[in-house]
Image (cartoon, rainbow, N blue to C red):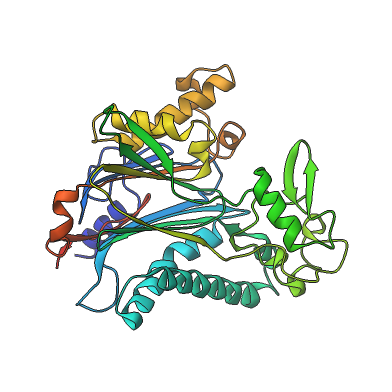
Length: 377
């Protein structure tokens, strides 16, 4: 009996390339779930690893969006692109959705305020982890994560973001039949001039708040994003000191938090001509434009579409280095990071004809590279 349980657990945690369970499949550094059903239509997910430890984390939750049986019901997507290590993105994956369910229950609805509170609680929770681990693991203060969230509920789409992951909508144009790309998420990367201007306005007394280093704009010469979860060393002065590595420590005292964990949140009423959503870490967008990604989704079968987007991104990365895609695939994790980043893609199809029956389908919980738990509501 024990051997059987261990075998089942092993199959769930480390799916082999030959297995094709509801949790998805593994093929070397690529994990994928070619097709699944969420309350409002179909979805597809794929993740490819480049770092020694996978720093991208992701999840799809469909069903109850609160701890109450009465709902609300809908679909939640999270893409968490870590940096400096996997600790923050893993923490966000474990806690953000649970916070959202708790606040949605308290307010008996899903709203921008509920999402904002979930981000705040997650940020505070990770600060607690850093505070606890600081004496024995001070470098955790320099670990952080981008955090992109999409929530579909009651005919509304909420997009929240800190960092430079991106959500893109594919919208059909009736007159021409084409599908255009609309970016729904605001990005917080100082390579964008408006973000640099925002940083200068928030720190008028610091002429070096953004520095051009090796031809790349960076906040204090250290990091490209201006908002994140974690990165406590740039938010709390007590963590920007020894024994943190010298390369992370500021020369001058920190007068106020340099980075922010405040998400940009928008709401969008879903229209019949809204076809699908692409949620992805910046590893994808470094290799293709919004419209290129939308064209790929529009012009190919739904089944396996997230995996196809990842493959196209890897082919683009290989082409930049004047190498073959098949040779790129042979490069091991860690070394692979010199060629491309971890890439996470979640494609959500919006089938408006099933929106009204959102309570009746199966509940699904799936993580990129992890398990899925379908059950009847």
